[in-house]
Structures are given as C-alpha cells and as structure tokens.
Length: 187
Image 1 (cartoon, one colour):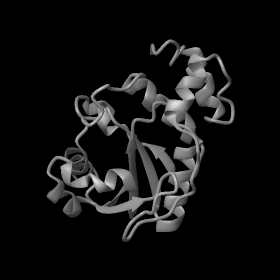
Image 2 (spheres, one colour):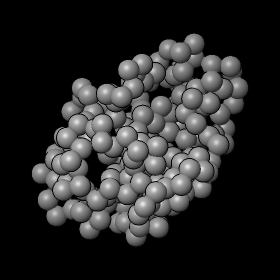
Image 3 (cartoon, helix red, strand yellow):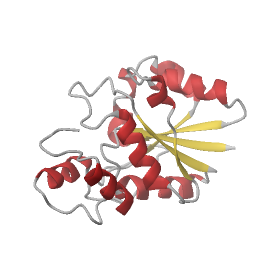
C-alpha cells in the first residue's frame, strides 16, 4: 500500500492544501494522503502562530469524512524539531508494510540537500516533488493547480476582522473563531 505524506505548518490548513493533497492522491494512485502538521519546523525560526495541537486539530477537522485524506500526528506527538528523516524512520517502524511517498513542494525540493541526513531520505520513501504557485514541478514531479490562498493571507484576514469563509473549510473557520486564533498574532 502506497501512502503519501504531505507535511507542513498548516497554520491554518486551507483549501489550497486540500486540493493539492487530493490531486496528488489521484495523480500518483496513492491509497491515501496523510497531512502531517510539524511540531516545530527547524527551517522556520519564527515558529508557528498556533500550537501544534491546534494545527493538528484543524487538519483533523478539514479532512473529516474526506475519502483518502487523513491527519498524521506523529510529529505533534513526538514534539520538538520535526526532522523528516526521523519521522520517516518512525513511520516505517510503526507500519512496516507501507510504501511511503514523501510529497514535497518544488520550492522545498530544491533545498532538499540541506535537510538533515538528506542522503538517507530516498531509502526511506519515494520523494515526489509537486508544483506550487505555478512553478514547474521538476523531473518526476506532479503539477498541481495554482491556488492563490496562503496561510499567511488567512491569518491576515482574521487579524483584520474579515471573513475566512471559502478560504478554509467551515469547520476550520469555526475552530479559529472559537479558539480566537490569529487575532493580534496571538494563539
């Protein structure tokens, strides 16, 4: 069984993430795609605005009832810096019969050599780059629709008191409002 792993901040998750996950699942013939919020991304020194628990909860709400999409909490549960090589080793140990496909945006794929133990990654998972924002996916990559929604823009709308309806799934918008996330940069 081939399962895709799509990691990220998901601060918050939005429809662009979900469309990308769905297209990748279809194009690669994956049994499913797990959206995996990072506990703490080492290459994002400013960190995340919402806690890892809030971000994982929003991903769970966004994929609830969506065939083939699910939340992967392994990095949130482990805590600390989220190193892909450690995560893939843990996933392989937990689910030895699964073939893992690491789904990486073409922008991140260009920096793959900077990742911790980058040379070990291909032995742990098939690495498939995908296009984002109209950039070419590169050799062996998958083109995904260019969707002009970003988590940064969603957070800015919340801070400005604007609606995020249609930007994020309704359950995520309700969660953001209930937990007063992204107001004045606070979580």
